[in-house]
Length: 518
Image (cartoon, rainbow, N blue to C red; front, side, top):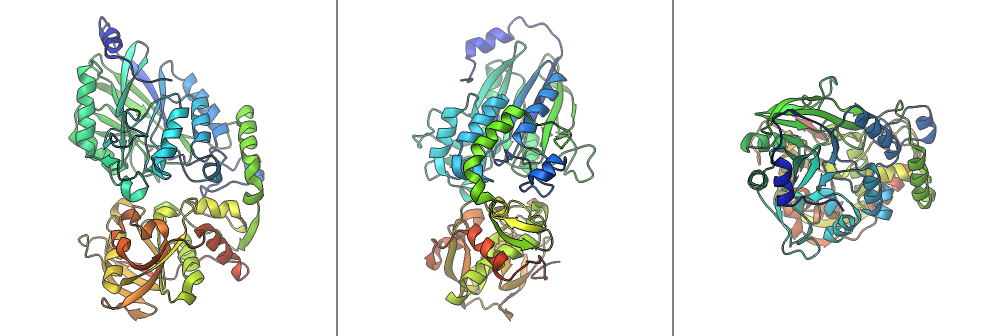
């Protein structure tokens, strides 16, 4: 297994080196989310006939050739990942981290950081993944010493070698992982800036002057880290699913985004792009030049036949459940995260309506679905269970409980508290309406709340339904953790949604103004 270079080896590499520029191509992915098969333009499953017509994107079989092609353009390269390989398709549901490990080993990754979804099934599944991979997975900003499955195994940084030069890799994971996943009580998350700077200083003391941070913290945090640290040359990002590009009109920023002397890159998500950054370092390890562009992996990229065969073999047990047609929709159902995390969206209405419909006869009046739990859109026409599971892959169950009107308002304030970051906590709702002022101070953004057509009463008790993740405080909904009469073991949310779509014939997606933005 590829791990650290020893301090002696690092010093041997750095001693006697001639003064010369050093060129390195950094190939990178992030937020792959188990999309081993091609995706549609909506980021969901892509029908075989569309893939044959060249209308699909990504998939590991294409990624094989995209990486091979990119490597042919460089004599010196690394392949790294910005986290969240786990979760997002039936492959993860069945194989957990084993399939991701197999595919990443085959592709030849040199390192990755821990994403929050790597903790979805607790430290045990992450530890199993670590036992399978032959490259380092890193996380600098957490203390894992009290977690026996990770202590002494999950490193904060690593050193790899290219063309006689040591290259430092540092892992960084979003600090709110305890709210987003299930790392457990024994994993304590730390300040990102201090953690990164501490590892930079340790690596520098070992003679390493080319340092790459692999960050699953989001584009905004990456810029903050670059601004407040010294010695970081490149940040390969993830978590915010940001497309950085110099040619795409929908890009979130330039590729790379330069903050001080640090080059920041990210390549959207789901294997749709392969990031390709070309960096020139001077002899002291400073970035002299950084340029590149994410490579779109579309139908023009051929699929590797051996990889296709292996994925088909692993997919065989999934086919019966995936291909079952459960409903029909007249139009595409928009679940684009760029929409659902900042305002009312069609997929949010569908899922929230489905939850409320299922338990309305239990005295439940309001439904809240966190937008981070909505992971794909659905094409028009027949809807398969596989498509529904792509939207709702987390195996969440329905939770019913009771809160006061004041607590419900507090929960909504949490939901919109990070609207500027397009965070996954944004609430999609049913049975209620509200207005959001994104420019107001956090905690004072919600107004005009109604429940069942009536102004909300802060003193009244309301029956609510959500998913078990939100009810237990996920995405910052801490107020729900102490809710009254909580029951977290309802039916699977994906099953509830599939049944709701099919309930009244063909489904027509819609928005109706239940969430207003000032």
